[in-house]
Image (cartoon, rainbow, N blue to C red; front, top):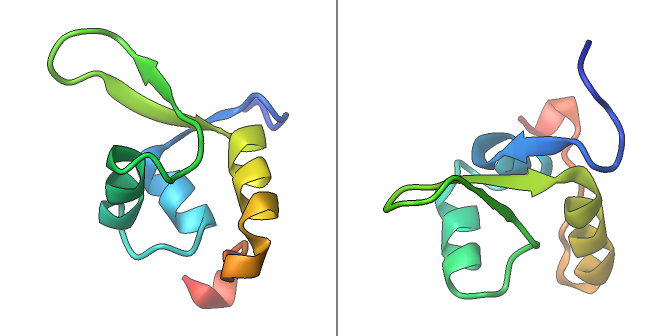
Amino acid sequence: MEYEGPDRVMTVDHAAALLCLKGRRGLDRMRQEGRGPRFVRLGSGPRPRIRYRMRDLHDFMAESDQRAVRVCTKGDM
C-alpha cells in the first residue's frame, strides 16, 4: 500500500512532473541554486539520493503561485 499523506516522499522525476518541469534538469538546477522546494538527502557519500516531500512541494507551489508554478494535469504530461 502506497502512502499518500503530506510526508510522502517523491523521486526527483516525480517531483519535476508534479511541478510541470520537463525532466529533472530544471529541478536539479533550482536545488543547486537554492531556489527550489525543500528536499531530503538520503544516504551519504558522493551521490546521496534526493527526495521531495509532498508537503514541501505544495508549500513551494503556494509560495510560487505568482511565478506561474502549477500542478500538472494529465493533459500536460
